[in-house]
Length: 544
Image (cartoon, rainbow, N blue to C red):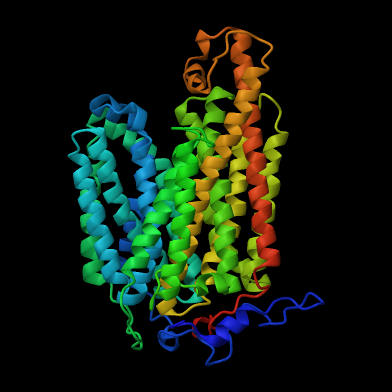
């Protein structure tokens, strides 16, 4: 396949020998000279440290994406009260997620072909247009459609900024910029709900979209003015695989639509679910066929043939799945079982974002000694133990106990995620880095969507069993009524309210067991699939 280096592929196929020592490169060190990937890898060593305005513009662009969901979520009551559409408001988030996820591979390939800067400028511009349209929406259907436009821009922002972070910084400094990006997400997780609530309460919900306009405009101007990509050696530019892009978009969109709506809009074993899943499987076969024939495929086969990239993709998919437990179900647990208000529940969850950037920044001191894979393996092993410890909490737990678990979990996941991202980006040259980074983010997003569907099914099954076998009366008869009962537990008999809280605790325990299984699966992938030492390109080696 065009652009794939034979020597790198052969290095990826090596693994631990019979005695446990690596039979490939002895450490996360460069392959011999001449073993780099195609597409100008020899000129891939980053230039001098980028100027401050460039770093600020990248962080500002990432903040647009990071703030989006959290700031919108707090204004949902006001949006629904103004526009209506309560039955479909969840698509304000699902539609955005669909657009981001299915466009990540497309933008990754485009950035490898045309450069990062034009793709990033296009993404910011499209996000800006989508925000303006959202602020002018006249009903819920229009707002959902405009959120999808926002997501089409967000996909370019999310993948391209991560790729630029690897382009602009040498290997030894990448943990610093990645930690800054993590701090943007951490700050957004705390500031987003507060800012959204203030705007919705004291201004108007439309301002949660209008506030993006000056931020996006400033980021657009700073990147256009200050970002200069290093000159790369010329490489052959084939035709854009628009057929593959359309097939990937259709397949991913249909699959995620089935996962989002399954068990909510219709039962999992109903005709709509089975039909959508069958159609997405058929489209997946079409994607494989189209991509095999394409001269420059959007989803090249080498993404899955190279052990390092394939292992990181699978591990990040498992990360997306397990993250559903703390991010989606922990607030419900904190409010329904612990009796905390929305602010307190948000704080219990958000402490995870305080420790994540810290351990991410410190991870370089670990992986320089034991390697990328083993550092990530330590992190995800700790995460598995921490997730399992949630099931050992007493009932009812004290608020500091799950908060401590979230704090420790953030620390473990920071040690897991960043070494994988830095490591996998360091095994490819410039002409393949956008595609590689996009594949990693794509797998995490798909894992999150699959996890939301699977863990929601686990929660619903637990609720159904507890309601059916309940020894008390006065409980909701249908799952659809559980949310209303949890919102107003004082309207239930005391025994029924206690039983419902115990059901929530049991459901969340089962969900955390599922998240534990996902963490164990990620650990097994790293140990059994990933090479012990990542084959870092010689141009990207940090100076001793």
